[in-house]
Length: 337
Ligand code: KG4
Ligand code: ZN
Image 1 (spheres, rainbow, N blue to C red):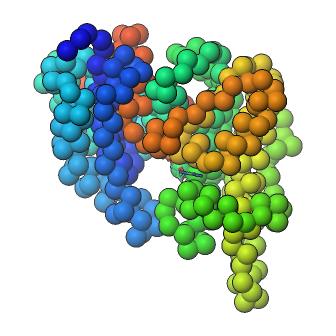
Image 2: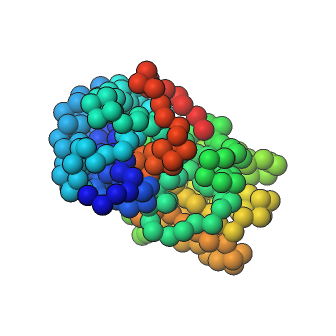
């Protein structure tokens, strides 16, 4: 095997069991993603107990498949990176145990990755060089954060959500509308048939002089709107509602990002997390940034949702800096940025 640095990445923080091999932090050799989404869909969200059991079943086959698909031998690995938080404790522990076993058996460094930073590093797997400093928006089912990276190892949290995450709002409203989990893609699909300017919803905190987000007031406003229709036995304009709700979230995210771009004077913006897959967000943001001659970067859809490759990519940069974890590593379910 030609030399390079080969990092195994393991991700089990939620409902995907994923293992990947990444060469030199940027080249994906394999990225096995065993999704459990069908198992959770019938309950309208992730059931922690089911997630843990499924990870136990899936982790060993995923490890083997990742090595086979990469066309390498176990002994070619230089390090093993694993998500240690945030996430479901039982789910995280399966990945951490597997990673420790690999590190111990092969006598290679264990690298601990914050899942949220992992999502950001997915941007370095696209083959495009991104010039720093950057402003980065991480929007997932559990988190909404606005960050400033002066270089790859040094970041500052500019703002975060004070209540619900953007993805959580998508999921909750989708559930009330009788759509499948995860709700984001379902709402996006439905929104294409609706008028996004049909209904005006509140945009909390936008008048405040910071970078924080709030989505719970919006969620309540949408729920009230739906209830009014139900009470009067009227047909809900479901496509208009989906489109207007999506547009409101997108407007809030873009307003915060643009403020950060102009204050921090960056030339590039990075999106990460499941909600970054939203086509309307990308479209409207891209229009705004092009006007300002600022570059927009986001991973392809498969790297936007949870995957082992992003964990391996960040693991590579930790490896380069010699930031190894001890084998005492434990899960930190509420880990923050
Ligand atoms: O990052 P992720 O895969 O998992 C974590 O939460 O860490 O993000 C999942 C979230 C879910 O809330 C899902 O509804 C949302 O990302 N999502 C989307 C889209 N695709 C996934 N939200 C809006 N539009 C989408 N196309
Ligand atoms: Zn995630």
